[in-house]
Length: 460
Picture 1 (tube, one colour):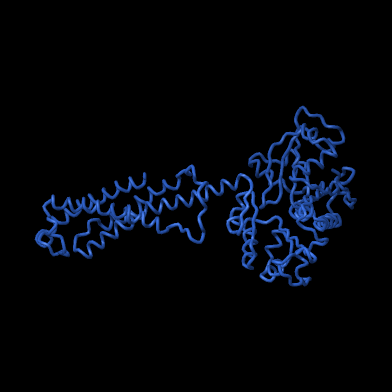
Picture 2 (cartoon, rainbow, N blue to C red; picture 1 turned 90 degrees about the vertical axis):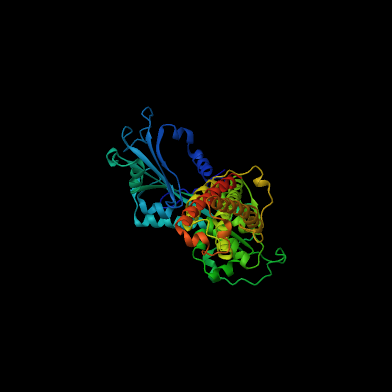
């Protein structure tokens, strides 16, 4: 592998790489200049802040090992006993704002003037036109007095991430170049977002054979998509080949939706959990890698556990209480479960118990089951409702009612005195206090029968 070195006012080398991993590419680049292992050997890594989409940079704080010996040239203006070095890499648009100097070709540090900054920006703009991503590498020597030990190491490093010295720009072949390498893009010219409003594409039949006519290609990034209007999408969807790069999970899903809205059949390939929404939405989902298996497993597990929770909550919290009101209304019987007990069942007892179903582990054959139809299969379908109401709810209600109304005759209130009386029975009119006392006992009998049966329902 060879790396191109373009002379600039900064004597900044721009490396062009095509590797499966950006880190391995940069390592290979550095290896040609000097052995990476030998370079890292005398240095201790004290703290690392990994790259993330919020900061758009990575930081590492290193110090020289006590037993390490540096050559004189490298040790200029650096105290091996107390000084540390902060290394930074990330987007030039972010780190350049934090820089105040530049490392020249001969190793001297010069101030970052406006002219030098313009040169860096020009180089940064040149790389994307070659199909390259750009990273800026920077450093800062931190003196012993610059670190305040009362702060955590993370705060110290973030506070020190200023007045950086620009060391190098690194250009890495981006999505467009990789697409050419793989044969996805074959057209000589690839347009970009800035060209969308200045070109007029001919109207082609996208379902016809495209090999017989000139191909048009477009390269877009996630930040470009944030500026899209509906008219932009209409223009984009007319291209034969489109390369999307650096997109978020939401943007991937949006791409699938936009093409489906124009009656296109969309196939989605994904290798991670962040691809799961667009894989699900696509007409054809092609999953790769191991993390997508976990995503499918837990997606199905959540659906199954929700079904179990609904199936558990419906019998006691719905049909068993509804039947009591209907029995009291149509047959004049006293309400065998009080309103307060109904609220207690729905809000506290059943709700708390159903939380255990959320932590149910996946069944052994969960991934072997046939995928459900998103158009036909519902969370609460007729099978679930039939099971909850007919096979669990009705027997549960009958048994609890039987036990409650069985208790009242044993306490001296005949069932015939309650049937179709609507509160005008003999005991209800002559001794209402006694009726209320026995009814409270029957409420307790019904309630505990309901609770015990629900425990069996939960364990089942």
